[in-house]
Amino acid sequence: MRLWPRSLAGQLALVSAVALFVGQAINFGLILRERAASRLAQASRPVAIRVADLLEREAAGVSPARAVRGRVRRLATNPIPAEATERRPEVADEVRRQLAELGIAVGRIDTQLLPASELVQRRPRALRRWRDRIMARLRIAIEQPGRGWLVGVAPWPRPGPRVLGMLLVQTLVIYLLTLLPLLWIARRLSRPLRELTRAAGQFHPLRPPLPLPAQGPEDLRQLIAAFHALWARVAAMLSEKDRMLGAIGHDLRTPLAALRVRIESVEDEQDRTRMAETVMEMSRTLDDILSLARLGHSSEPMGEVDLAALVDAVVEDFRDLGDAVSFTPSDRLPWRVRPAAIRRALRNLIENAIKYGGSADVRLEAGPDRACVVVADEGPGIAPELLETVFDPFTRIEQSRNRDTGGIGLGLALARGLAREAGGEVTLANRPTGGLEARLTLPR
Image 1 (spheres, rainbow, N blue to C red):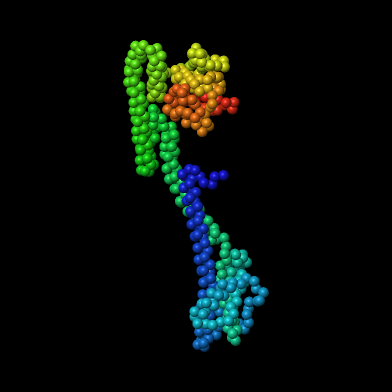
Image 2 (cartoon, helix red, strand yellow; image 1 turned 120 degrees about the vertical axis):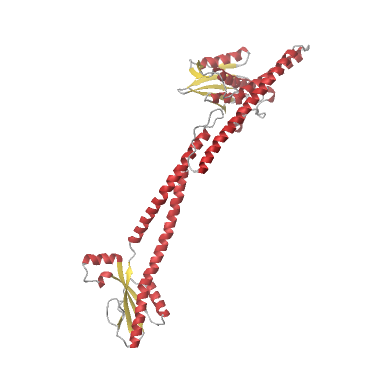
């Protein structure tokens, strides 16, 4: 289980809840410490003051100590039995300290915790039981060597669930007053952020940006406005690049056509043939560049064609040129595509298989919502870490492919671009038996 949430609202809520919990825990510890100090002072200070008052009156001969409840009285012996269990030595130490501050020297100090009902026998039994749960009485016996014991009684609040209950209620109120507004603010922030993330994920330079209203705090509004401006600038730059490539390609067609005409005047047949092949190679390169530049700007309409017949026709063109290309016959498969674009992508894949593998084995795999044209060869294959690199324009892998076979590294890039324009994909994989397998996948 993930304890750390991924969303902004969840992280803010968790951090705030932990911070509030730690703060309340510290607060609870301070309250308990304060209550302990207050209870100690409440039990020791009155007894010390009354002892001092009694001794002062005795010294002045004003009035003898009487056995009055709440007062200090003098006894001959220690009224606290030796087997008493509920003693409070911290109270004895505090009484001794306070008496020492008052200049009174005493001997042993003993304490015993008594139920409050022992001192309120005339009260109803239910009231006495309730008082026993929340309050006790602490008997404090102070020895005066040679003069007996001074005995007093002080209140002693029992630690009960009341403090914990009050703290829990307080914590709940703080959580409600803090976390609910914080969650509301976090969700208000995260909603436009999610929309911005979705818009960025669906970015396409040839499509207008998704309608994304500027909402939320001012910083977030500025971010959304900057995203729209960035979308427009990137789209303009890519469009300018496409126009530049297209202009270069068209401008080069005229001198190439002139070269093709002048080649005919070359007398040496071998030189003429080589020059013609060079011009043809340059023309093919220009066609690939123009096709890349036109990706996304295709004027060819979508139409329903027999995909099996289309693949068979492309394979037949290569057979007419004497290439070793085979096609596994397939049933009629109506599919809605741009025929020229798919034909061009398939031709590039077959050309690669022939150049680098010597032959091409083509088959068609049909599914309920996708069709896949598989082109397999028996060449050396490609290193696994370079299977995606070869799709970059003008990329060639000399380590695994023969450099003398021609091409400038646009075939696969163009094939993938045409496939993605149709909503499909082109992938490469090494065959277990050797060679490479290219898969052109098209959605219905």
